[in-house]
Structures are given as structure tokens and as C-alpha cells.
Length: 388
Image 1 (spheres, helix red, strand yellow):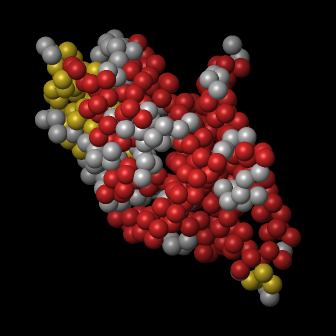
Image 2 (image 1 turned 120 degrees about the vertical axis):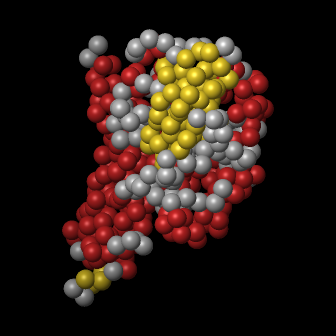
Image 3 (image 1 turned 180 degrees about the horizontal axis):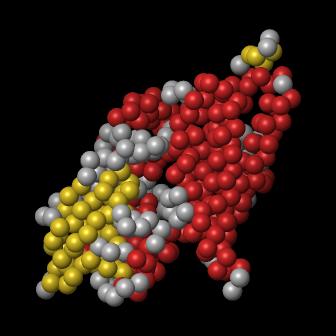
């Protein structure tokens, strides 16, 4: 079964006709609006801002968000459909940057007041503003409980000082859902503030140059006595760590889907190449070693995707999946590591050349086992659950 083209009864367990309709429409959108420009955007290190508006007008940015906030609703699997089809652009950097609102807005949707939601969620879902999430700091990535950026209450404002790094959409973001330290040390002293980029004292580095995800602008952000209105506090003071943890679950699910699609695309490219490419007078697919490698790749992709879907179905049903989503992320990344490696091997010298999709997939893949919590952090989470 070619993933996404047909449905069968097993597939229907996860996706219904509405999902299929959105998938078809999004695939057309990607094919017509995105893929023809993607190489240019990769080289430029960003894509035109109007893409946010186009995607918003078609309802794609609103998938998974409440309709009364300008969203288009839909369950977890609608979000998966959207992510899978966006990944067909072949640029995970484009997907990450366009989708940075997907990790920046949920804390505001979950814990924000109606007024905050109107101010900070609606314009983003309308494609008018770009939102980013600010958690990682130069002093430590995965050590979230050790956030150093401080927010000190000063009348009806907070005075924010510190910095964030590796922030996806950071160069162009109009607003940052930012984790700050309002209390004592450790997990219990963290809060969330929405900091607007035009706040005096807020400054942004040049776009950071990365191994992969080129089409995504990534920045370091600095706060020098930024006066942020206290009304921008999301939820209660010093309760931010729990919001971060909750937010991570959905981010990890999105990363599973990105890893599975990276592997899927690498597999599709390899199959195409094996049919067309000749070596020693016969097509590559004529060699048992190639055929068997492709079979192993296809099996791994299928297994990983099913695992992700199963976990997603349980999350959709309200079942706690902290252990399983951590396992699924590690598994999906392992598979994607292997399949992108094998794809480059099948392509030989061409697999190492810019302009070949497998070269980009191989580079873009490497961040997936680091972002959203590293493989090692996932193992710590899993071990804390299975050994307690």
C-alpha cells in the first residue's frame, strides 16, 4: 500500500473520509504552491511570509485548534494528515518554521484567558502574525528545569533578562511564548510570558546557520530589561513547568510523524531510483542486495508508522502515553536514521549531491533525535516509568 494514496480497512481505523479530503486538498496545495519553490527557499534560508496567509485562508493553519479562536477543529489524526502532507514538500525546515505556532500557541489555548487568546492566538491562526516558542537556552537544551532567563515583577510589568537559543521562526516571530524564571530554582519557579518582538530590549541574532532545516529561520533571542505587561502571564505564576511537559507530548508526536515521513520519502525516492538506474547492464532493482535493502526499509517504515498511529489513537482517546510517545519518538528517529542512511547508499555518489532529495532528507533527519527532548532524555523518561 502506498501510504496516503489509497485506504483500506486497517487504515480506516485511523482516518475517515474527512481526513482523506483534507489530505487530498493539502497534497494539491503542496504540489502547486510549495514544491516548485522549495529549493529556492532552502537556499534563501526562509520562505515568503505570505505562505502563512495562504495556508491560513485555506484553513490549514487552524487544524487542531478550536473554531471559536479561528481554528478549523479536527482531531489528532487531522493534525497528522496535515503534518504528513506538509512533509511532502521534502523540506522539514519549511514544515518546522511554518508550524512553529503549533508549539507556541497550545499553552495559550490551554491556560490563557479569553482576552489573551483573542490577542495572541487569533491573529496567528489567521496568518497575520508568526508565533514561536522560547524554552531552550544557551546554558542547556534539555535541562528545562534549569531555565535562567528571569522575569522580576515590577508593578504591573515583569522585567525580563536573559536569552534563548535555537528558536525556530525566531528571526521573524512577532511573539514568543517564553519560559521564564519567576520563582526559586528548579521546576517550580518557571512561568510562561508572551513577549512581543517589538518590546524595547528584545533583540534577535542573525539567522543561525544549521546543518539541515535550511528553510527555517532559527535565532538566538536576547532580553535586556524587557518590560513585559503582567497581563501577558499565561496561567498561574510558577506553574509553567507543567505546561511545558504537557506541550512536549504533542511536539513529540509531531516529531514522530516528521521522522516517519522523512523515512517514507527516502524510501519512495529509493524505489524510484532503483527502477530507473542501471548498473552493470541491468536496473538496480535487478540486484538482490538492493531489493532486500528496500524490503527492510519498507518494513521498518511500516512498523514505525503503525506504532506512532497507535500511540496517537490512545492520546486521542485520552489515555496517558508519556512512556509510549517517548518510545515512539526514539523508535521513529532510529528508523529514520537507518532509512535515510540506506537511501543515500542506494543513490551512491548522487546521494551526496545537493539537488537530490535524499541528500536533504539525510541532513534534515539529524535534528529529529535532538529536538523536543533528546533520545537520551526520552530514555530517562521511559526508565523512570518502567523502573518505578
